[in-house]
Image 1 (cartoon, rainbow, N blue to C red):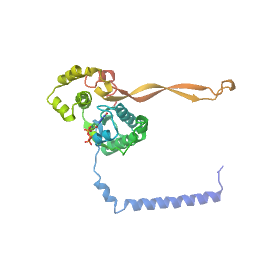
Image 2: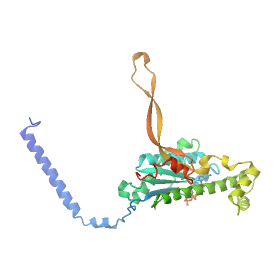
Image 3: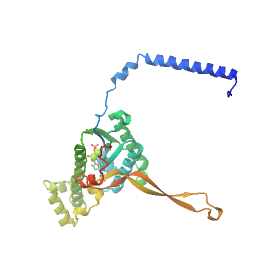
Image 4: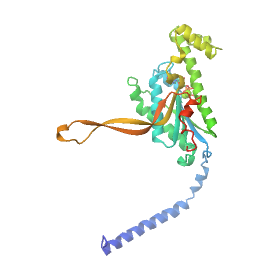
Length: 298
Ligand code: DGT
Ligand code: MG
Ligand code: MG
């Protein structure tokens, strides 16, 4: 049986055909628009197939930003943890990121080799990572800097680099981690000389001119009783984010029998989350422990 009368059916058909005629007319108009040609000015920025796509972000003028917001020197754990929170948000909100690595004011995100997200358009990858990261930085600021107001909106630059093999990708990540090590060793000694020995920044710079890693370790140990290897892993190695299964315990109100009313129940759920590690990426151990990251499946 029909759900509506013959008269109603007639008026519905008439309405549909009016809509259809309008759509068709609009379609014809759009296809023939004389402005349509401007689309051809859009550059093709498709990332080469089979390559690892890396997006690296870096804080804009963070030398000034760190000064204005009273970041601890040489490392501010709040700032580093906020960066990691933003990177986790990027991984959770966007698609296809298999690993991320961060240090100082930068974070690198590696997309699956086989990713076809936004048809592999570099500008989409880069702008979505940068905007999601920057808005998260502002959104989560208060959670990490309770007593320090955010004085002005921070910015992040971005770039896309393609790596054609697992080896070049591993070398890229090793390069960023080596950079973290070199800068952190230098900064640790530099600020010890300034803060603990009372040298001016220029004097500390002079003192360190031409020194090798061994010399810096020696200054730290003999002058400040600091064993560099005992410094926090997060400062020395940076942060690697990998997807791992974690048990999340949640407390929730549930409908219970009258005699148990008001009680809460804890529920444990297993979720896959981007988990921060401070592992060494330069040696083979990490890659052997996490073979899935570089596997052909990605
Ligand atoms: P850019 O990237 O060319 O716009 O300029 P900057 O100033 O961001 O330079 P960059 O990225 O080479 O160096 C990062 C700056 O961020 C560096 O001057 C120190 C600062 N920074 C990053 N993390 C920390 C931290 O935990 N504590 C302090 N005090 N400063 C930090
Ligand atoms: Mg920067
Ligand atoms: Mg930087």
